[in-house]
Amino acid sequence: MLKRRTLLSSFAAAGLLGTAAACSPSSDGGDGGSGGTGGSDAGGSTGGDKGTLTFRLWDQNAVAAYEESLAAFTEASGWNVTIDVVPWGDYWTRLPLDVASGDAADVYWMNSANYIQYKDSGALLDINEVIPDGAAQWEQSIVDLYTRDGGLWGVPQIWDSIALFYNKALVEEAGVDPSALAFDPTAETDSLRDAGTALTVDGAGKHPGEDGFDVDSREQFGFNSQADRQAIIGPMLAANGATWQEDDQYTFASPEGIEAFQYMADLINVENIAPSAADTNENGDFTRDLFTQGKLGLFQSGPYNLLPVADGVADSFEWALAAPVAGPEGPKSLVHGVVAVGNAQADEAQQAGITELLTWLGSEDGQLPLAEKGVSFPGHVDAQEAFIAFWDEKGVDVSVFVEAAKNAAEADTGARANAGLTAAIPIFQEVFIGRLTAEEGIPQAQEEGNAAMAE
View 1 (tube, rainbow, N blue to C red):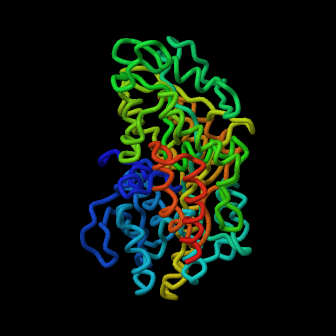
View 2 (view 1 turned 180 degrees about the horizontal axis):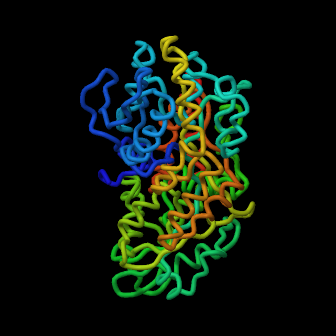
């Protein structure tokens, strides 16, 4: 697995930790290289006689599954498909240039924070016109996420929600029930803070609050509170009754939002049950790596970390999943999805092939390899059982992610969502590291984020 970096960690490296575009076990998909679209030819399918289509994505870990799927597509349709992998770090720089020059792939991956600007420019096919009644096959929350102005602007491929990974031995030893964790910023303490305290241990075996506890010698941590938009910020804001945005404008600086942000920061700087933001602001995978090393009891994250956790833990300890931590409004989960979009500007000769390819990529047969290889939850609802079965064989019940998706927080949408996040996330990081209070920083983040989206 190339560097084992999730999309969230790529944002961390760019100063954009948690910017709402995960849905992928790895973000470093490919090595750049040559080719008309600036990516790397990662394979695809051959043997057809109708011509060749191009399919761009950013995750090398999905390539083997797509190769298997596209081989069946070529046999059935006669169209060859070349897979073009452009790594996440280059993807959103190259894509607008390729769209502007007319060199975009026939079909390519898209996320929720970017699709509206391409849809508004006329670059994308309306899937409702290409695959009439197709939306009924796909995960409804992802269909809703990519529905705008009466059209559907992508075929759901993979999706994720949020759940709580936990170390069975550590929670048992600490007497923690991971299925019954909740937070309440208005209370003196709550079950999350109590659990985190019981799970956090310094070099002398002391817990936070005990005489002589040394925060700098902590060898084990309780919970991964960090400036992670998808796994922590989104779910905990919504669980505290705060909204993220309305009509493409941020609204998170409400009293409930400020309260939730301060609570998340206090888990780090006051309760001492989460690692320092000096580490997590710079490395989005820091807490995941602590978890795989057996040094973190509770790790809230998404299915994009299933394979890295399974590989990292191996047989060193047993782990399982529970619902995300609940708040006053219950448990909430941020749901994201990656879609395959059709190039509306492709040559007329390619359009028939694009329609056939999009139809295949949206079908159960087309998505089964993604599920059977454990890449992620597939967008087609009938293929999801294969993904669940893959993890069942490994002793992990991932159906908790399906349940979590039923209580979804707001995802990032808008033509300039990435610009807004680029402005807001560094200020969130200042709050998490303790250099700004939430009362100071969160209104500033909202103001600067909204200004960036309005430019």
